[in-house]
Length: 151
Image 1 (tube, rainbow, N blue to C red):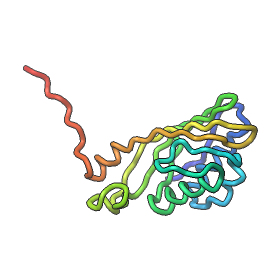
Image 2 (cartoon, rainbow, N blue to C red):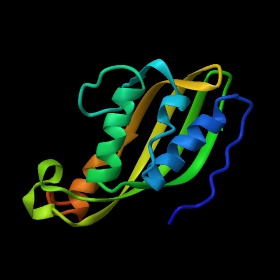
Image 3 (cartoon, rainbow, N blue to C red):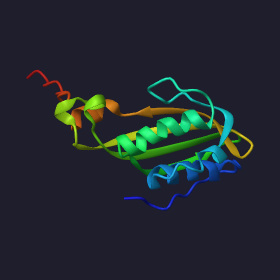
Image 4 (cartoon, rainbow, N blue to C red):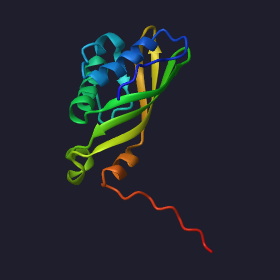
């Protein structure tokens, strides 16, 4: 499922963003401290985290070890101090997050990640994820029904 990552733009932190997704896909998070600033903030985390590489590694450990997330990067581009990544995540539902009836079910989730950069490192992260779609795929919620037009 993993594809080679390519990126466009001139931001010198692009290799750090590529390396984060490679770390997630491989499950080897040992490089995270080299890729983010000492005061890195993950605004995309669903739980509060301490700033810095330790907090980011903590949530990515959950993502890789518990949810078994692996990303397929669709697009990656940058501006002077931002990197944007559009990716599709494949994961496995767990009872504590998705409900007991969904546990063990695979899912796909569209996601968008924005990083603010400082030099060659990532300094902040925001994410938008299709978590509603995951809940529908795993049977936790019924998918919405489109309204039937009046005759």
